Each structure stands twice: as structure tokens, then as C-alpha cells.
Image (cartoon, rainbow, N blue to C red; front, side, top):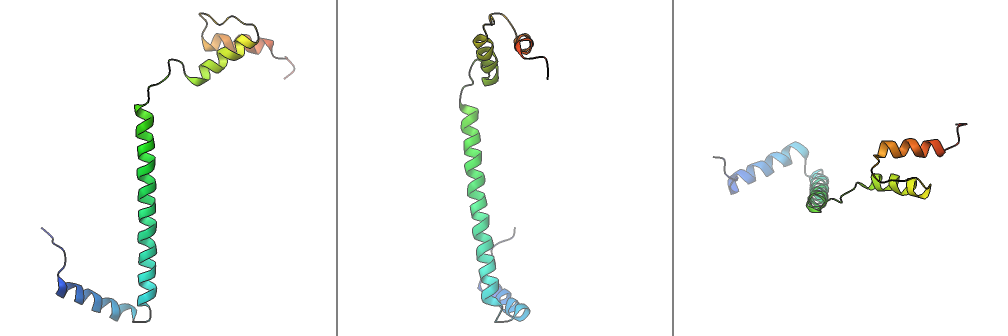
Length: 103
């Protein structure tokens, strides 16, 4: 099992970074790592928030009729078409028959 590096290993890693990048580039490197970590944390929180919103929508009970189905029935009722016992497709056909034919 791999464990966290100890003090000696951390000192070796730090020395290798100084030798590879130089002392002048070290603050710039630290800034870029810090901003990368901050962006990662922001994206992680955003993902968690989106997941929680999705989970709450799954827990909410669905209405008996989909929203679009009730819109079709409402439009048909506004046009004076009887909606009882008719499917959405039948209602849409009747609604189209009320529309002008010059399309």
C-alpha cells in the first residue's frame, strides 16, 4: 500500500522542483497550481449542486398529465373542440383543421 511521502521525500521533491524550474519560476508555478486547484474545487461544487438538483427532481412526484399534453387540451378547449376521450394526436389534427390552409 502506498503511503503519503514523509519529510525527507518532500524535501527531495522540493529540491527537484527548484532544480527543474528555478527559484524565479517557483512563485509563478505555485500561483498556477493554486488557481488550478481553486477552479477544480469550483467545478466540483458545481457538479455536486447539479447532482443534488437532479436528485430532487427525481424525488418530486410527476403530475398525472405531462405539461405539453395539458397545453394541447387547453388549446383545443379554447377553440371549442371537445377534449374528452381524445388523444393528443386526434386533438392536434382537429386543431390543424382550424388553422388557415395557405401555409
